[in-house]
Image (cartoon, rainbow, N blue to C red; front, side, top):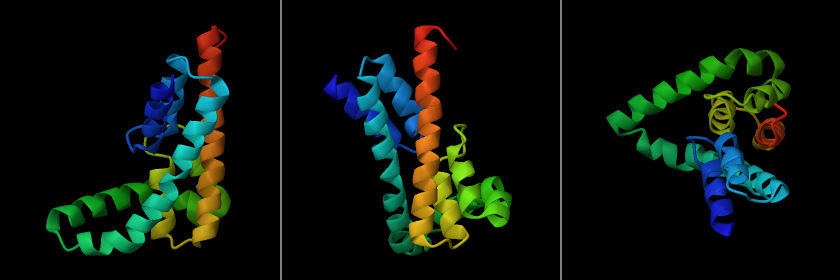
Length: 152
């Protein structure tokens, strides 16, 4: 069970699933429903400080490499296109909703990039990402629990 919780948390740190994959993985492997929620939520919240550090400190050095720069511009455009109108129009609340929607292409990775692109204050961006992650995690958690009980 401990190994399954660790794997679920690693999925929640991963850009390939975040808590949208970590929570169902943990629940389907028998991890306590409250423990899997808390572990995956906190692991997913850790992504923002990691991404912020990467974007503010490491990114500028990597942009010197052609292939990295090309990839970074592509990812930045995708994040800006997906979240741009919401964040421009609604700011903090728009970022919460963008991160909250549990579909591919949204989440804390895209939310971190979007908040960096739109130069949001770090504390407000972190709060918006954390609130969005919380609601996204609740949606995925409740849906998975109900599906496992046959109610959904």
